[in-house]
Length: 139
Image 1: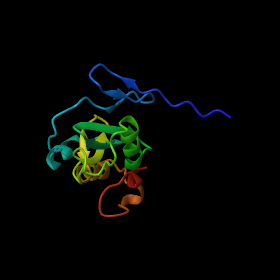
Image 2: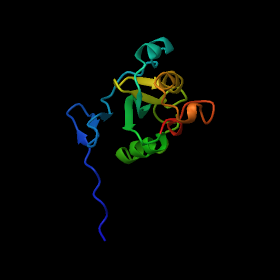
Image 3: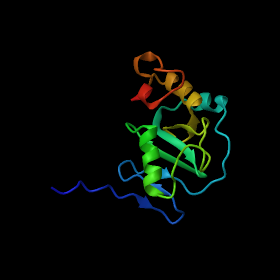
Image 4: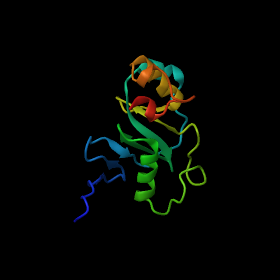
């Protein structure tokens, strides 16, 4: 029995990678690490949440629903086998860099995404499982 074929990720000249299913960029080109959008900006967008996302190693990584943050960490480690931990010992991962993308492709922290998800009625059962928004709250 042969193993299922892995989907081919498209790699652009600038080093960004595109999901073969939804054609959205899952790994952007290297970027300057900047703070996430303010809550005011998140309230202005009010776009539905569509992807889990992580800012790590000066790049924005994302996967579409129904994926979760742990799947994204697996992708990061698969694409760069020299990364041992996606936990702040390498790169820039901390509590402020795990988040989500909205339908327009904007990165939102978990708190900013909670506001957008509430505005769009995306939180399953109408309330969070814990104290911060997780993908399990959405899909």
